[in-house]
Length: 289
Length: 314
Image 1 (cartoon, each protein chain N blue to C red):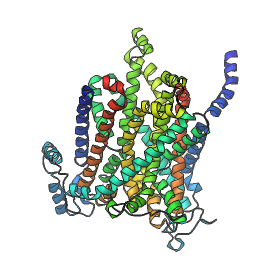
Image 2 (cartoon, chains in turn purple, cyan; image 1 turned 180 degrees about the vertical axis):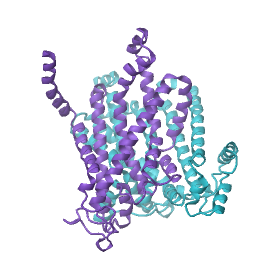
Image 3 (tube, each protein chain N blue to C red; image 1 turned 90 degrees about the vertical axis):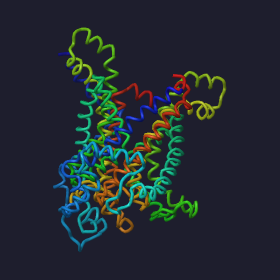
Image 4 (spheres, rainbow over the protein chains, first blue to last red; image 1 turned 90 degrees about the horizontal axis):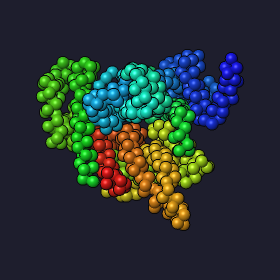
């Protein structure tokens, strides 16, 4: 009881100290949470229907009526920007979750089986030789434009990096003394896997998944920007920038507002990833800081 | 050393084979009829059949792959569905602007990234380090096309000192060639420089903690001699590696930057090919870019023997 009380009293100051030591994690989390909330409550934050056309009000500058102005078809840019967060957030989170899960399973297979390793890693090396954006572009060129297909295309392009990381972790841990000791003391394969390998693989994979989420959001925006992403009827930051680029000289806000939202979101995720890396790997943090 | 070179060359072969299989499979293993997808929604049955026949999609898969690989090995990348001209010819017409963009970008990226990384390592945990690292994270996070538009807004609209659109071949004047490449290369180079700066800083910090650096200091060598003549060479292997890896970033970025700045290069060719569903062109460009990426990384792997004697004698 005393120990439990002591721990309870000890935890909040420790937590505050951790946030002070790693402010980038806190800043990244706050910005990311704000973008996620914006995506969830978009129908309430939007002042107008993001797809409602109003040609008479086209290319209006920012004003109290239209906070971010209007686009070439008179649509409200603020409402479209708010809804655009949904596409980026869904893409980032889905790609990070799917690529990390698939990559972890394949990495574990490669790490534990030499035959699988030999074949799988050659395939991954080949996939990694194709620039991720080009692979995603090629996959999108052959499929119907939809958010689901964009996510699948980016997952395929991102998985090889996770496989390589997960395989490396397994190979290192498999020969670690504590794993050898666990095996020698009679722990079975799944015991070693779930009790020793996976818990130690979580930290680097979480850090990697943040970078994947950031990269996925940029790739999605690039695909939409060049006309190979989500359908143009769906408001996404990439689509908005693509539509706004023809009138950039007279209405730069059409490109800049969605662009700055995308940049802030990606920056928040990268800050979170860097902070988590330093937090979860103090040896690396000491060495590089 | 010969053993290392041979091992690296042999290791490249399966990578090239997998790239070829993946690029070939893109059209063949896609759900549905690839000929119908390429032909578009309003295509007639005859047009779909023509595309199927032209791409050889009506033959057994292994025969298709054999014929396709044979053609690729002989430099035949197929024929564009839209222009009905050889893909290799289209690529040859467009490679100049992309190559120019890549060269200027790499020069900018190295000239900004390495000094910034050195500065951050030498002043580790002090203000210059913090500034460089904040800029590096920002460089990573601001998407290339957003950066491009910010540069256009700054240097072509608000303060019009640089041209913003198109490409002038070097034959028409070095300055006008360079002038039109400054903004696109800078937009592309900043992310590349951020990657190089972070790696340079980390690699240099490792080397600066080594015993021989302490010995060099004790012998009275100037700090700049220690950093630029001794430490940087020892830290060059990870820097060279990241320069090679960054080529993939440049390739992806070129597609976007050429669209923003209306540069008639391979990136623009790819975007036009997507709009027209001209798949032989898309395949050709992917094969070329992947081949260049593999080749550059092979050259960098081989350069380790020169950069790090331990690799030579391993």
